[in-house]
Length: 135
Image (tube, rainbow, N blue to C red; front, side, top):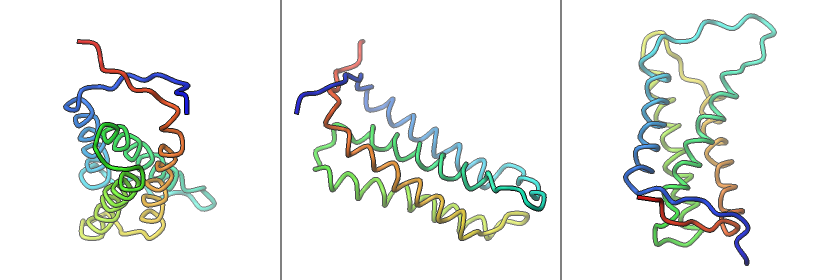
C-alpha cells in the first residue's frame, strides 16, 4: 500500500515524555485534585465524555510510541488496550479508596472504551510514512 501521509517520528524519549505527561495528567485529575461537584438533575454526564476522550488520547499517544517497536499490528493493539485500559481500571479502583472520590462502573467502562477506540490507529497506520525528526 502506498503511503498517503507523512508524519515525523519524534525521538523515543520525546514520545515517552508525551505518554508520561498524559498518564500524569489523568492521575492528577483523577486522584489528587478536588473532585468535581455533583451534577444537577437531568445533567448529561460530561465526565463520561472526558473519560472517553482522555483514554482515547492516551491510547493514541501509546500507539505513536509503539510505531517503531518490533511487534506486529495485533501485538501492538493488544498491548495498547491492556496498558491503556488497565491503567483506567486501576485509576477507577483507586478512586474508590479515596475520601470524596467514588468508584464508578460507568467511568471504568468509559476508560476502557476510550482505550479500545484508540485502536482505530491500527486501521490507518499503514497510510502513514514516518520520517525521522529533524535534529
